[in-house]
Length: 203
Image 1 (cartoon, one colour):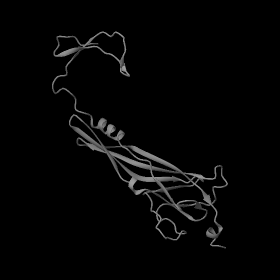
Image 2: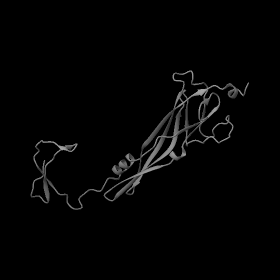
Image 3: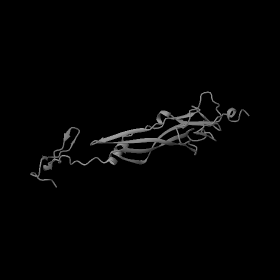
Image 4: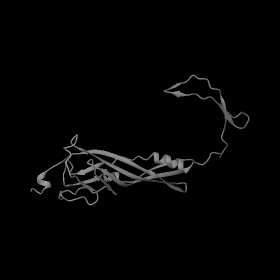
């Protein structure tokens, strides 16, 4: 119900809806809305600001890198890693009424689905393959070895998916909290082939 005039400072308002620069022609009775009393505005809710800050986080999809950089080889190690530049915490801040809350997302693990039914979970971005290293060496922290080739499957490749899980916390106005984790996902295709001279040491 509309407030009545004579109960303090206020004004009459007429509501109109506008879209694309045009206003509707519907008649709506004017309503009296009193002005808010000075200092009566409630303090912003830190949890609501934290939600806004979380929604402002810009988490990029992981940049997948595999070695060998072209075809993967049956029974030889595949190194898996993500661009380290994307394995950094990301923060966003929301503020209102003199209250500021910051949400921080921190990457904690990446789950690799290798397309042949195998999965690998790594607690970091993985280690890039060193130039000149033995191709038979395995990654120290994030790798996989295919046991059969992809050429026998429809399309001739395996879909490879990297899913990064992020922990999200917030702090502000003397309070702290946490949100359910967020995830970012990227997908690529891997062609896995046989090279007998390499996979059997030439025998």
